[in-house]
View 1 (cartoon, rainbow, N blue to C red):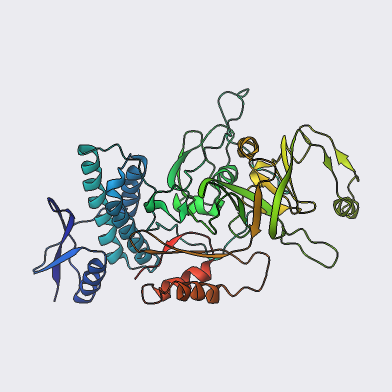
View 2: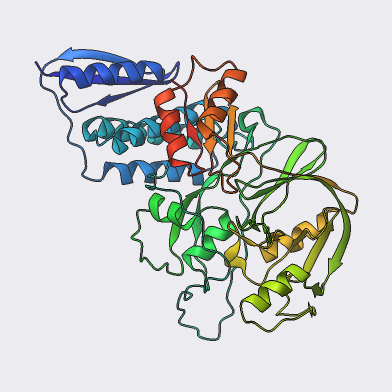
Length: 457
């Protein structure tokens, strides 16, 4: 027997929205009812053959509706409604990955309807509150079969976008993603789901480096082909949210697996910056991995000269290159215009002449920042600022509304960390074992793509 469903979505005591779905089988309807109940929706079952035609590319419409919300100034008083919409999108994407098109269409359509209602409410009843970054649901990009580490800096930079003005200066200035705030709604997370507008001089790889995401992520979330060339003015969606790996009162935390620098002041995260770190190379004679441990900033250097370490001189000789002992300040200096020396021997935080290498493992151990980011960071940081380099591939957090998030990265330095065991131990430690979807956790651990996902039952 076929049955139809009318779904009532309650946004407040005065607002009710009705979505009439397409005709489903008994089994599918039962599944939808269960999930809708978990999402605090009310399902009313009525008999008959009622159906609703769904547009062929309903997911694109849902993503567009969600993007409109992200670009709008949604008051923080509507955080719970926004969280509900994002959770619905997450459910739809999960069905899409499982090739359950019928169920996926239902939830994509629901996202569209809920987004329209929230946008209307936010416009009609604006407040002065600062929009909060949602903290409880992921809109995951379609997962790659295997995670990919961005190419090392030695790989030639792809051809840049063309411009009608051949003499125009390339505009590659970084627009930083919003940092975490002290608002309860954003506690534990940083970054944003937003839209980037392609500028003159941009390539897909350079954009990914600026935003701290992979090129594959940009291709997936924007449904682009592998050989796609970006165009000036093109708008690209991205999600560079991160779970903050460690909160400190003051100083720097650099987490190797997520290739991110976190800068704290007065107990609050004030800046999050993507970085390039040491290659995984490690032999009896060579180790280019960025070391872990505590440090202090001991020197700030403007227009630094690079004194080439003996180990890198040996590498130059082995590769048949001219061996140099130093490179003076200037366009050829790999340290760029700004460098910060740490108390860890041989380890600096510095700018780079290869900005497309950011968000990769491509240095000889130092921490590289995007040039514009490094200039800003250099001005803020003070000598004697404490810091720590950590190695935390698995991160978990609980949002203000109680939803649970998981972020899993590769064990890139092959430290023999069992990621599944690590995830399980973190969940047990926080006493969340009865509140999470273990099947989804297993899937996230297998992908190891570093994308935040909602794992709440």
